[in-house]
Length: 390
Image (cartoon, rainbow, N blue to C red; front, side, top):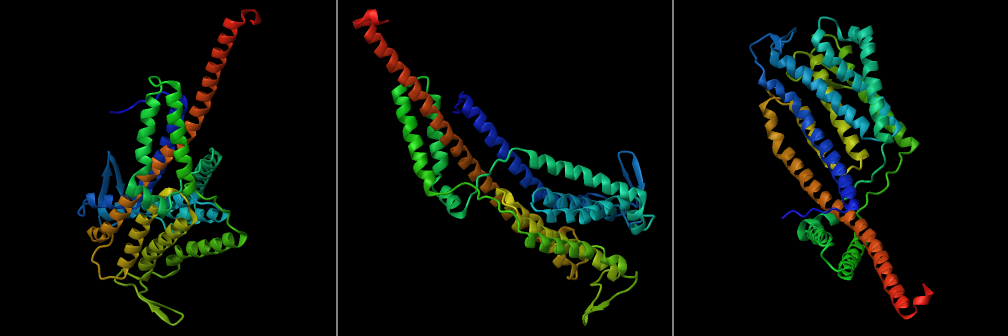
């Protein structure tokens, strides 16, 4: 039986909790599923060389439509991933991310008009306009997120999560409190206040034992920002390095180490694909270490996938980013299950915190009401015995 609580504070409190949990799980789902969008290419034909969708026909120089769609979606999803890293991280080092952000988006659009050289497209008026079209919306979105009222998410450490998973403490008491609040109109005022005080005191004692609030986010020091800027500049240079390798060259020697093409057409193609995956892996790890959102574990899903795809480059695989990626699915499924379980626990504890605030408010209002009733009773007695005083 579902109990409806009509208290205004309860409704507003639960709306706040619902919004926070919805925003959190929404972001987690996007992060979890984003890298898999490139696998939509498997739905397209390997035998057609002209791409048609909703009456729009596109000519391309790829071997077939499947490769064309894969190339486009791979860079588009990479662009979205870098945007998420930017929006959900802190520190001025983030602004270097506009370089890989522009790179991935430029490749997504260049693939449609690949009759020109990529470097010419980047330096053209269309490429510059694309950079501005990326810059302003992302900065506006970032400013909007920073301007929103800061709501500290519930921080669930291992001890708290394990205890809640075993004894279901918060969920049990949340149900008991809901029943008491729903019975407010049928219970005598004193009985209602006794129960409210009992639950409020119980929550206070329980919550002082375990800290559930997310620790304050410490700003990065100047040295940390500079070191991350240097790393991002190196990564940004890495994703462009394949343009400096002549077409047809099959190996290169760096510091006495020979690097071959590992089954790719040439070294330039190998570095193009390998650098993209390596950069995404490093950005994902930086994001994982820099954020404190409760859903941060969801970042492991794309990181694991990108790591596997990077490892796959050096293996004798006939096709990349295809059915072979299913090997990593058990680990990703485990990550998704862990995030879902964490969300359920976070939701329980968030509701518990709302009830804790609500019970204190109910106790104050009830005591004031009881005090007024006693005052009215006392005045009535005084009026009966000494009617001339009123």
